[in-house]
Image (cartoon, rainbow, N blue to C red; front, side):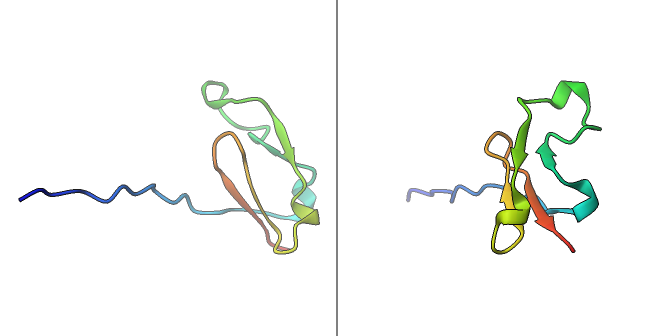
Length: 65
């Protein structure tokens, strides 16, 4: 009897940011050097739900104010 496992991707908790953190970039300025990818700026303030996802690492950001 074959058994197949459902593939699942772990969901990262959203990183909360405030307007004082804008302009929002990923990785953040305080990220460890070993964990860097090219810096991208995420226009989170223009998003209708105040959320943005990094196209490189998948980090989810939520604007809290």
